[in-house]
Length: 277
Image (cartoon, rainbow, N blue to C red; front, top):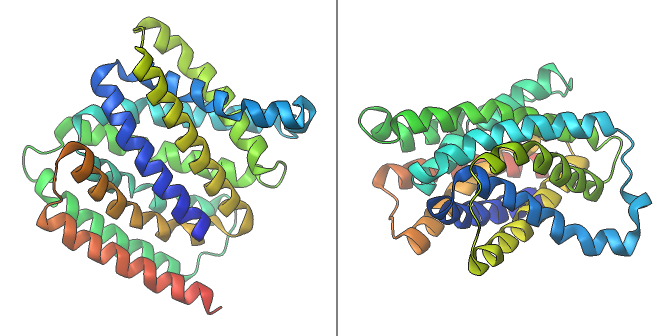
């Protein structure tokens, strides 16, 4: 679970920086450049190990995963500039519910009652966070766009878990960068804007954070049931709230704090149950 928690922290940090970039450049251009830099970050590993070390055993699965992940990210980056960071993370917490369902139905994992309960308690914390926005102006239409990304992210994570049977985490993440970049290229060309030197450097940072996050999460998927990892993702709301305060000056609301407390409680509970098994 530590790999999953580390991946969540890196991903939340990347999302905060990427939100800045989507306020400066078209979201589709920002989306494409993040994955270009993700590939650049992995070039030293490729040069060290050689191309043969990154030849996938399941090439079709790698590109199916890229297509699903690119679909999720297209929706995600379109909505990202319009929604506070804590809300982005909270809405994304619907993904673990889809993952649990998919793990039980598609991967035939045995999802214990404790995992379902922890996920449902954590999801109730998400609803507490979102309640003010769902009842008024709030996230509105863009919240629904962000929500639509969740089942696609869940599908990507499930394919990722399946791919760990064939390839190492580094191979999976390398081909994720390649395939998602290729799927993002057409839309990026339509809305192309030339980044500044500072923006290029910022995308390089995002590539480093994103690649590190996916390496950590893929390592976690290879070590245990994907359903067991999902409650840990609820801690991301804490990271997102702190990053939103530090970067955008947006303090978490009372409902965000209350929902976060519920989420952390459910995560600690399931972590203790899993460690005692």
